Length: 593
Image (cartoon, one colour):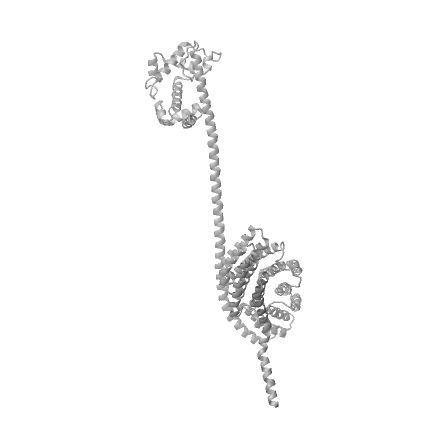
């Protein structure tokens, strides 16, 4: 009977042990089942919120591939319901959680594949906060894949988009992403510059205090890498204000933010070998109830502080603990070995230190190869990024150069247009003056025919001063008028006008006079020498032909008026009338239209 009772108790105990894990999972499963029932029975926003709560439960289990498959199915269902209800806000939240789930599973290719479409959705619906967050995740995916060039391009695209809409939070987030890209490449100066700009913008906006405090932490890390310890200490008051603002906005303490500050200060004092100060911040770190500070960092700091105080036993225990916690890289493990060697030497355990030195040297050779390759990769990536930036700058300069040329051409065209307009106005005025002189000459001709003056047929080029009989001009006799009139008739008769080689002797012989008499008569009547008078007559006749015969070329008219060389005709015409033959002909044609 006792045996039976014992077996019964044992079996019940065994069954309880077997069912304990199931019982532990029952509350979570119960929540899932409950939410599924709510989804089936609810409508509208309640249904979408239930979907939201349900997929958050599964997001905590995404390490399990089967749970991830279920989660993706839930995302599809939630998306379809949000589209059905026309709820863009909930639809955007679904897309954001899809990207975060892939990031948490290190599925960077899927992030790169899906994020662009989601970003377009956020732009279309002006969901800029989600746009900034998911664009950050896309940049993170490129960084973790080692594609720093693409990460930099996306960050620049994000910054320009935010700048266009004057979104300081978006600009700050883009600068944060850019700084992280520089940090991975160990480009400390560029990282520092970006984080300082990011911090400056974030102080002007609200709702981004988490990123603000993280930016201070990263900035301290960058300054530490450049050994700018005084700069870090100067940042502390600002850093503390940022954490205080973060706590006020959230209504709760932020141990992780304080922990990052204390780590930064602890590292500063360890690097400057002020171990007492470092110990103070180490104590503050240990007093933070919930922090995510690296146990490796804490153990390493403790080892150095104990070593500085001569407590080598505790220092050795802590550095061994740090070696266990090393997960970052072989570089950290070798740093641990270096500290441990120094502690062993101070403890007099030289043989152990030598053994450790052999391990250090062997690992260091491998690490050098890795480091050199990493440097080459970094230089190659930096070259590609800087090449891309240089190409963009060159294209921008080309654009400015082309724009400048276009502006110059436009100015030249405007100048030519303005100049032509001025010339046209001037030519029109000259043409009108010439035509007015023609009208005056015609009136003078009519008046001369109605009087007894023997100048009826003298060419219109005769100046008024030559006929007034004032004390400044010689008195002109009727014989002189007749002689000039006969000269004019002779020139206009037959081909004499065309004869460019006609000599003065031929003219004198034809008129039956002598050189002195002809010269004196022409000069008295016209004020010109006979040759200049004849040349003026030819140009005058050419001008009349330009009026009467617009179909003729200027060269043909020049030849018909006795000018064998057109350029001479052009020069003399312009000198006489202040306008070229071509311009005069153009004006004459325009007046006839």
